Image (tube, rainbow over all chains, first blue to last red; front, side, top):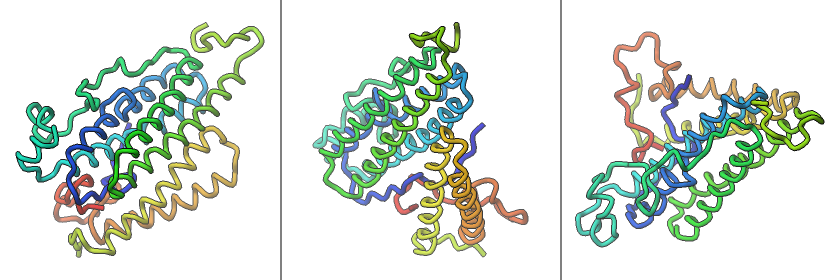
Length: 197
Length: 92
């Protein structure tokens, strides 16, 4: 069950539109290492997590990722306010505009739509937690790539916040992996699926 | 009476305060998931939780509810859906 709070996890206050940078940042909305995939990955993997501490962590991080999905949507939304047709043409935003006007749709920067193949839910806690740690690093790299392109501090500040959270999640998933490995016994030395065998 | 002036600096300040307190809670929440016996962290969570409840109540009374828990019992109109959305420019 989920409850909504009518506020962003970190304030997004962007006064200047910028359709060029919006087309890059949208990758963290629906791209391969974006927030949609992150939240769906953790929400889906929970059922195979036999350790309750790790199941709770996946739930709580998934919920935070939903708040990040909302923040990235707000950033793209505020960057694409009040555009003239001339600005849409000059910025290359026309390719997006023709299908979505200025609505927010989950896609990668290259136009590839969001797809569940961007994440796994393997039903094996060790396999899934390694994926989760890699996913947090991939998202952190993407935010670093975005930050090299962003000049406006109003855009950079919420992106820096999101980047920092990827690092915290990586740390927590590392602890979760250690917790799951500590549950294993000598008969499962090679850490084969502790949820199934 | 509720003051729905979006640009009111007290409103933005209060919203920011709620954001900071809730962030502390979120970070403690994730930490406690993997360190469930850290009593100091539990105590900090309890403290921020009580501060947040107070701030959410104050915000609801002045500017309208941020959560359905804070809808006024004697409200004559449904301010939850009458207020702007948090992704709009000027909300935060």
